Length: 261
Image 1 (tube, rainbow, N blue to C red):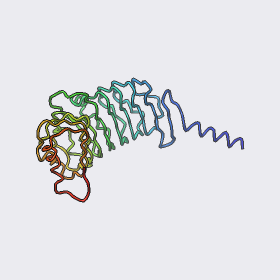
Image 2: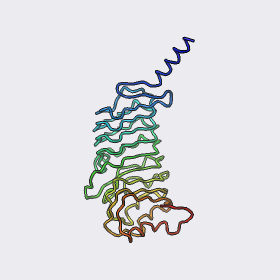
Image 3: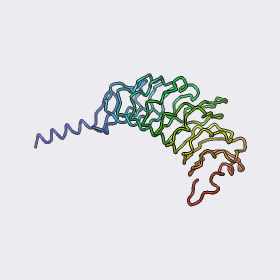
Image 4: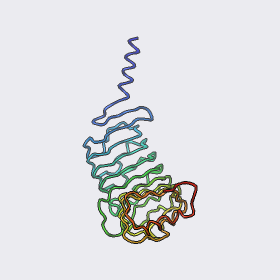
């Protein structure tokens, strides 16, 4: 009886462990490291190597060096929301071939600067299905924004990213992503909806969300033409004239059966 109680206590204590200031839960293939709101300025290097989820949201991380996560090769989910990340070095995500979800919302990642010096920044993420890098552009720079290269993320199905006033997707490789089905734009600084805006997007997209756009000019009727499979369009806090709104809905004119909006 006493031996059983001792074993039970040991089992319970091992399922909830504090490593440094991070809370480690789970075991085997379900081990999670909660390092949120701990004041980290760097990625911790002393966590269990077999964690599958690492939550580093709401810390003070500004720069992520090369191979920062190389120890955590089993990671499937990485959350870096709400830091102050402004730069990502080459090979930042080296070793994360099993990662399914990467979220870097609410940071300071400039689409024109933070990614383009490292065009292969996302290359190691061969299993990635969800990428969230929206709410990083706190203001529009007023000029063209060249979007980073996503072309090697062949399993990507969900992309959440800011939409600049003059977005350029030509060299982003998005048109190569045959599994991409969901686009979410937030923050949105787009003020003109032209037929060329999304001309370099894949035809596989079925869901699109726009958040916070203020459209100053009349939208062109084929604005969403590059998305022939579009099934659901969500406009959140979007200011647009009535005439433009009708043109935005143009792709849905021959669709029926269920509510797409």
